[in-house]
Amino acid sequence: MTTRSRRVRAVAVQPRWHATDFVTADAFRRWMRAQLEEARPHLAPDRPNLVVLTELNGLPLVLRGGGWALRLRTFERVALALFLTRLPRTLPVLLRDRVSPIRALQLAGTDENTALYLHTCRDLAREYGVYLCCGSAPMPRYTRRGDRLTRAPGLLTNQTVLLDPQGELIGVTDKIHLTPDEQGGGVDLTPGDPGELRVFPTPAGDLGVAISLDAFRPDVIGSLEAQGCTVLLQPDANGSPWTAREGLPPDPANLRDQPLAWLESSWQVTSTTRIRYAVNPMVVGNLLDLTFDGQSGITGPHEEAPRPRSYVMTDPRPGFLALTPWVEDGSPEQLRRTGQQLAAGSGHPRENAYRTDTLHADLTLPPTTLTAPAPTPHEDALRALLRGEARPARPRAWLWALAALPLLALPLRRRRP
Image (cartoon, rainbow, N blue to C red; front, side, top):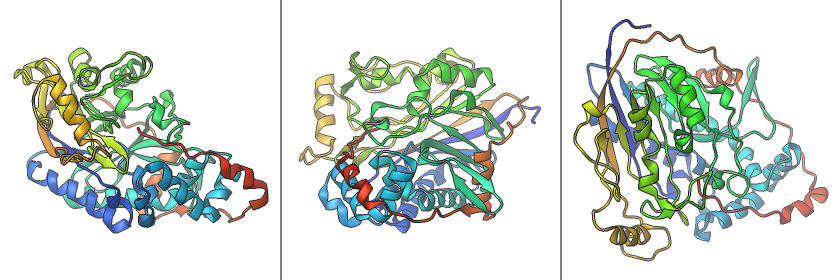
């Protein structure tokens, strides 16, 4: 517990991803390290540094070892090819856990990919000496039994992991409100439990996590506010052109420009609640046939950010401490055309020419009166994994090929979070 106000440096990294960043463990480590290298010039030597990475930056690890399949060009075709070529691993999971083929594909490699993801983030937090919001990744729920971790059958949530500068686990938060592309017709994730939302007091702030759509939802923000959150972390992966019109749940028929809709997340939180700051990094880039775009920002009290500015296609306003420009300015019609030119499969010379950026802002935080929440069994398990005290138990490999033949016709649906 601290008794004095604190100064903290917050850094948001907006990277561009490609499918090839995930086909090997080394490629993934290079991609993650490049983001911390981008953050390095923004780190302050005299205060805690909080680096926040983007949503679902571990999802494409499902492609690991499948570089040969990228020539199929669409996520749906690649996922189907990987499911079939990995049948000795995917089919037992499908049968044993009674899940869809796309979830079975992810779960079949989840132990190895979770370990790679966490160990990579741990090493980076230690090397750069930062509090690290790792972004988020689809991961299972574990419990620890001695030196073995047991996976909860079928569960796969979109999880954010927080680490301290020693690489020790601070806490884990699940995404609660899933987009349609994260539900059964897409990557088929499990929604988190709102009752498990917690705030984690650290020298870098009393941290609360609202992954992407959760930051738009009053139940999530209200819970974090009531628990004393001072810094909201909103890792994001917006799966469509930034200047397109799109309806967001729960009213998908209400089409609006996406930048206008995004004002109802971090900016609105710090403008209308007691949560003082919010950090919202957004990934950009075309992942096979999937498009991701946005503008990363750090928001705070209007008196600390009086300069009017905002997302493209919205009116300038106070409250943005830092904001990544979009690729260009112009009329809404021009910007919508440019968004389509950048998108996957456009064939335009500007395809995938998104802007990358790294933002920082200094946060002045009040003294904390919070105590750390009790760790969950899952957090205890991940802590043991990071310390090398336990590892996932390997289930027996078994295959009911004849019984499963009808299941092979089940579609692996395209997803776009």
